[in-house]
Image (tube, rainbow, N blue to C red; front, side, top):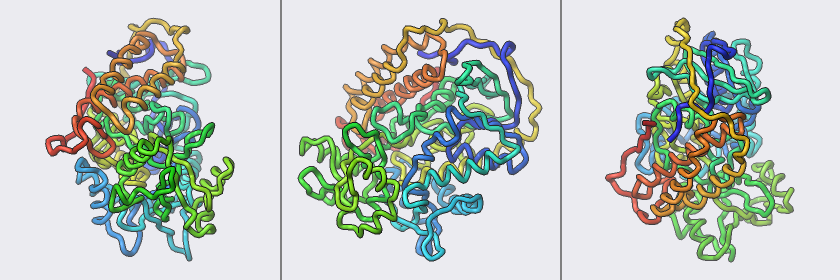
Length: 529
């Protein structure tokens, strides 16, 4: 179906460099991993496709979950995570997350992340499916941006870290199941460079851009998953995609996340007739797990012949709303909505990938010297449905563990540098409209592999996607073409896994198999033949 590379190249003819650790991605997982490695004295090359702040982390609003409150415990956080994960969480991974998470968050605070406080104490809020108030937030609803700011500042000032912006990781340099480095394209000159390292960490984020409606930034095109899969790595749980229930739905307005924390503070969901409907679907009402809320919203939209529902904050104190959600207030005000009195029109949109590159508890993939962490990785910590605000914590905990694991490799840093040659692709075809293919893919995935799926729809999606396989015969010439190749590949992986799982569980809902089945308490692992 696909070649192991998407460009022709000969490393003997390319500029090259060698470092100890190569990190691909500049969200919380990539930045924190780079920081941890640098702190131990290792030289790090951090590659990012656009600028350092172009990441899912920067867009995260609600917060980061950690047990720092007096009436909370790791055991409670553990149980909440398992419940949300719908039977597919790796219990050991969750145990690591909830027990090591508080230490990592405290270190984040020491690095300069300024979380909101009340009377000198951390202001903790509650979100959907959490049994306690354990969500740290910053500037009300700009938590990700504050974490991104703090870590970016630390990394940019670090002499051990070299940052290359506007550089796209095109493919991995792998031989005999060992990763030796990364083939990289300079987005401006379109020239290729080979970077060799003692270890490579993929922290490239999610794949939300394979859907037309997504909370993810434009860079979230599944690059890390595609790179790893082409190189022969195992990927897991690709069918489990979390659709956020409440994304601003206004004509002409881009998708904008209305944080889970809004419902955590007491907002109601109402249909077009003003009826509050969530208590009819779940005992936790608006604080039910995200997959439950999404399907409830879709049901209400269908039964009321509407393309949206409404989030109502009018019963909450106006000062609380403005103080707690300044970013959401400003954004909605720009569209003529006063959220203290006007209901916010919302609809579900693709938000988070539970699946990804299969790793162990130290970020190791099935390829030697290749690691992954953050949203691009999958070790089962989120199961079939991620608990709100566990994603940022995931990036910290397992980024840290990667550095603990690969120190021997980084310390040696004296292995051979093999040459790589690939010339089986046809020259780039300027007649291929990659932007049009991207749009077609997004429409296709939303229609057939979105929040509600069926066997016939998934087969249609795969059939259409296979018809686009012809583009894989041509070398890519720029970042845009590389992104589309990655999106086509991960789109097929999502549809393939969703077709295989003949049940409904967490973020995967099959209309033709609406119940969960015990026989499916297992993971689907895919690998390139």
